[in-house]
Amino acid sequence: MQPKRSTRWVLLPVLLIMASAIAQGQSNKASKSAGTAIDQKAAAILPRVIEWRRYLHQHPELSNREYKTAEYIAAHLKQLGLEVQTGIAKTGIVAILRGGQPGPVVALRADMDALPVKERVDLPFKSTVRAEYMGDTVPVMHACGHDSHVAMLMGAAEVLSSMKKDVPGIVKFFFQPAEEGPPGTEEGGAPLMVKEGCMDNPKVDAVFGMHIEADIEAGSFEYKPGAFMASSDWFTINIKGKQSHGSQPWKGIDPIVTGTEIVNALQTIVSRQSELTKAPVVVTVGKFHSGVRANIIPEEAVLQGTIRTLDSKMQKETHDRIRKIATTIADAMGATAEVTIDTKTLVTYNDPALVKMMLPTLERTAGKENVREREWVTGAEDFSYYGEKAPSFFIYFGGMPKGTDRSKAPPHHTPDFYIDDSRLDVGVKAFCNLVFDYARNAKR
Image (cartoon, rainbow, N blue to C red; front, side):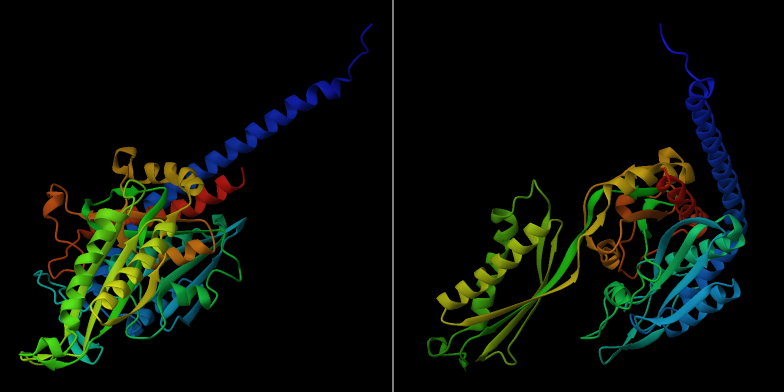
């Protein structure tokens, strides 16, 4: 004869299931309500986001010199009542919003610096700014869209501040200088932001960033899990030969001929020595300097270039191969070669679990048909340094006018760079939705 079960032990699992369903339903309802509010607020703030972006476009500043840009941003953030820290990594800003609900710490990042490029696009807000760069006076332009990144994050800060009582956890807003690289031997950018503690106090649980792209249709997103953007290493090869009269090369050791042989041999690293089915590799010599007069064989030559890799093991192998090629060829020619390699950025790595978790957020924000996975990118981003401290997700956001032939869109870092800023509200919504949805998903 079976013993009788207590009624409460029979009902307990049922009650637990019902409670869980009710809680989940409440969570979904709250999420839907927050999403609706974000949509409405982002649409309402779009004209101001465009205004901010165009002001910044007309008043660009170079890396580590973003003084007025930082003042402009800080004034807005202080007006919102955020905790604002200035002077981070020279001109950077960290602002903190403490939400009214329990939750994680999420960081959102925008970069602020412009480039020494002269703008050719005829716009009412075209840049005519000139500034000092490495001892020269140069034109300055937002030729990579950082002005739009700042404007979208300023918009997200305002939207989230207006929803403070519903915001889960803490949001940290990073306005970062010198993403394009600090001048000369100065420190700067994300490495210095991290070094000065932006990812701590409170410790960041996840960090998100976006980069507008001139060849992706406005309002669309592209992403890649895992390794997404390449590391960037800059190399210098100093070749020492022996000076001689140009009419008597046998009395000298020609560093130019030696350098030419090295340049040619470096191309075999990609074409013959790297396993390209595993990940791409790029080795580019961008500068070759030697000599002062046509009839003098000089004593020295200097080669400079960049290395792009998407795998840490291949990065090390490429470094080793450059050193071996340069020193071996120089030795064979009777010269010497000294190789130095400076790592500027790491591989930008999108945490696969975080991408999977947040992909529905992007699809809900822009429409599933406007979110696409893409291939590797051999460009580099110092956002990678934040990913060393917490799971990160870096996303490409479209700024190409609808109907434009993607292959004909002017590239970044060029005088003709142009973006359509009419859909920046989608970027604002994405930043805000990522905050709410990450908190909800992290609790599960």
